[in-house]
Amino acid sequence: MRITRWVMFMLVLVPCFLQGEPVISGYLDSSVSLGAGTGSNPAFLYGLEEYANIRLQARSREGAVFYGSLNLIAASGTYAETGALLGMVAGENYAAALELERLYFKVSQERIDFQGGLMRMAFGYGFAFGPMDFLNPRNPLLPDARPRAVLGADLAYYPAENSKVLGFTAAPRNPFAGSGAGTLGGLAGEYHGDRLSLQGLYAYQSPHDAFVWGIHRFGLSLKGDLVLGLAAELLYTYDPQTPAREDGLAASAGFDYTFPGGKFYVLAEYLYAGDDASTAVSLGFKGNHYLFAQGLYRFSDYTSLGLGCMAAPEDRSFTPIITAEHELFQGLTLSLSGQIPLPPDADAGRYFQGLIKARLRF
Image 1 (cartoon, rainbow, N blue to C red):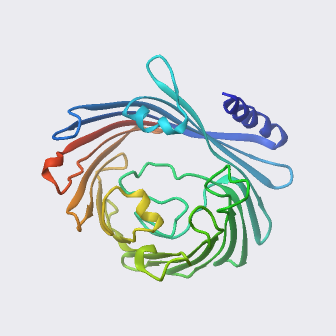
Image 2: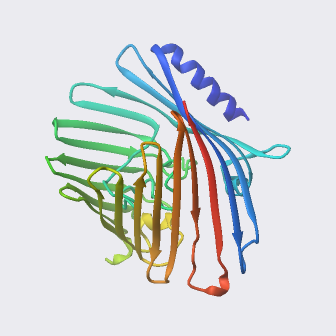
Image 3: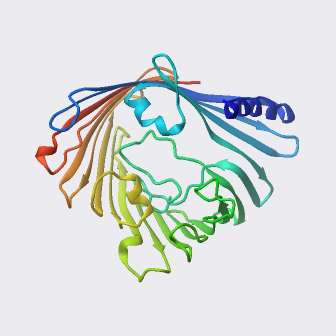
């Protein structure tokens, strides 16, 4: 519990040295998960969770901004099982955890921004998959998952209003690597035109574990705003120890479109993920080719219904998804969702997972 005390002390003490009133915001999710299965799957599954994300922002006298956020979690059932690796502490009928999610500062000058600390580093313009976002691989089956933070820093230079050059570095994934093995560094550049945005990326990860020569990553992301919203993205991971091959390639292409009137929205995206690509780690299907499609219809400003599907054609696996959402009043939203992962082997059985969630924003 020593870490917990230090985290609370830090979030209370730091704003005392900053200027103006700190801004506290966040949300509370109350979730109930119910599942039923056949075959080798459990006949019944349930989970309960209270999940609060609390964010703090404050400015200093010298133009710097402090950002911090915490996750407070109380869980039971399936939520407690999946959260066991987060360092949960068991109570009488629940497991609880406190997680430091963000802790960083930002200093802005006329053409330069500097950030440092535990923060989100995002790359690319992909819709559902985002292969170039290799530090935080996405999974469209988990749209509400908060991307993990990394401990590092970046320096952004803006040569013009529509362009940016970014230098970044991140600590090794193994926090106990005192030698610095696995440290990441790289450069990224962006250009934004009237209807076209382009981002390029190069990153080098120093030798670590089995990668005695280090790892090189090359990325390119393109976004166009035409009649359709278009996005194409690729990331190639190169290990000098192995011959050139496509296992390190991840590439996606897709579109989105909002129909006239703004009530109906559609999205579709294709992904190729090689076995050594970062994106493949976040997906549960076996194979290299993936398709994701989604349609969302808004009945009003407060109520919507969404249908989607994630598919892996190689092994005929697919997961239909349905989501209904209604804002009861400003700040409180109720949502219902369900997924049915369908494996290619009928003997493996099927299962259904439903989720009821109430989100209170403050």
